[in-house]
Image 1 (spheres, rainbow, N blue to C red):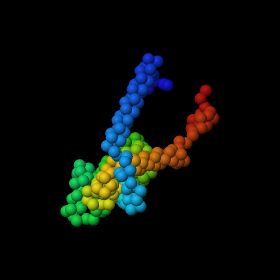
Image 2 (cartoon, rainbow, N blue to C red):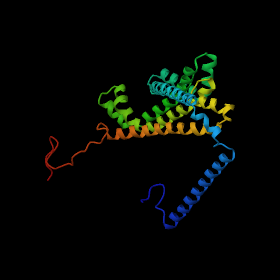
Image 3 (tube, helix red, strand yellow):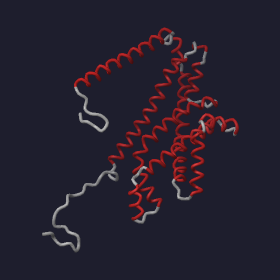
Image 4 (spheres, helix red, strand yellow):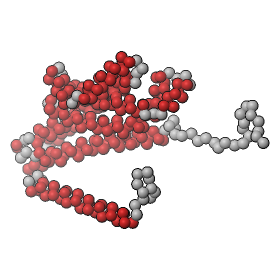
Length: 287
């Protein structure tokens, strides 16, 4: 272990103290999990009557159809949010003041507006169908947030990179496409994936406007009196699937990041060591 700017290497006493802290934390977590399991068993959440619905083909088809609708809404919202975020970011970075003001107004308005309010307004006031209403609300909010992510990422690139590109005679579009965006993408990628995870979780708001997504399917099953109101079993089925999808997005982001590091276009070029004998024109050997 080596010391860093944040802390020094812990000594033997500190390591023993951290080991004790770890044991105590583990014991507390295990006790909490045991208490939760006790409550689940005590309230008869693992009885056959509550879990029998998941054996029926109709229930399985309902859950699969809801999961498919969730993924469809997320796919539309993710693609449109990225496109809208890129468009608004270009407006925010524009040298034309009116365009920059309009883009800023749009970003600040939709970023401050609650997602549920936008979805309800589009669904009720504009009388849009559930899927387009859900996708539009998610796109407007997440696109506005991503616009700020893109703008901040581009501005985080060292200023000298921009100046060097302009000094080579490159146009602004070329500077953005070939110099700034590729370098900013690595810094932006974790935040972009985090925002897409938010969009994935927010698709669950669709059940409030009768969109038959995954949570809506679970609500139909949980509220069924014929199955003794299996609310907790439904939560135990749906929650790991949502968590798994979010972890899959994170894994995909790490995979993209690793591929970028292995890309020959982004790898550092080895430069040979300087050797005597190669002099600039007009420069003689030093005595």
